[in-house]
Image 1: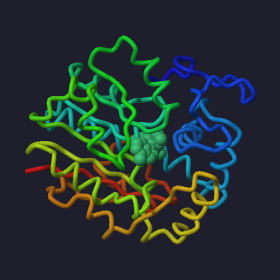
Image 2 (image 1 turned 30 degrees about the horizontal axis):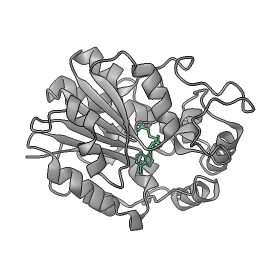
Image 3 (image 1 turned 120 degrees about the horizontal axis):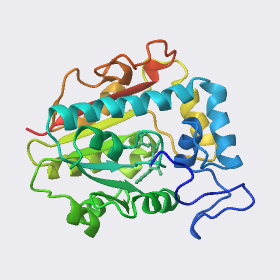
Length: 279
Ligand SMILES: C[S@@+](CC[C@H](N)C(=O)[O-])C[C@H]1O[C@@H](n2cnc3c(N)ncnc32)[C@H](O)[C@@H]1O
């Protein structure tokens, strides 16, 4: 993806080409994240929401970039070292520089990728971009009903669920409230993973960073109304039934850092990630 001219465009805020079922009076998680990553597929309402968050955590754009860098290093491990050839990226977000399928294909061109998001805008962009791609697709499904991801006919067409695959949950579980049962969703996923498969999780963390509570409140007050920052102990539950890959569940910038990993990040303690393996 990476080319913001492709796919559906908003033009300016007055003249949008968003799908009919999109509520443009509210910010969306995907468009706020796009703004933080320097993308163009966002509206004034999204930028206002992002600014609520930036007021509390001025380094928020760096956190978003760190998360994308974590995904890049994780794919290097999953595809390059662990030999994974099937990836499901849940909560994939809007196209950005260095999309999962592009990163994976740089290492192995035969990796099959299914993008999953519940935002119709993400779906419209993804469909336009992946139109002629035979081994990458995007589906609309909801992590709160994980079976819809496994049972979608486009997933079953592309993914052989009897063979190892990687499930990516990057920056999504902190948008699910406890009452929406995120632990049930990950338990369902872990249960279905065949041995040799992997689960990646990255999330905001509420333990070591004094601004975490205020940052979570900013999410809630911004119009996104979706924020639940969890502690280390809470988040370790997402990996129950899996063996953590080295170096474990850590601040994302401590996960196999390389020469591109930021070391001067003032809010590195707000953001944790890891990969578990089904044995
Ligand atoms: C912050 S973005 C993360 C993008 C990307 N995974 C990353 O790590 O860089 C979160 C994405 O999750 C999607 N999302 C939020 N709740 C979801 C749900 N219940 N089911 C599917 N997607 C969801 C949002 O629409 C958004 O595109």
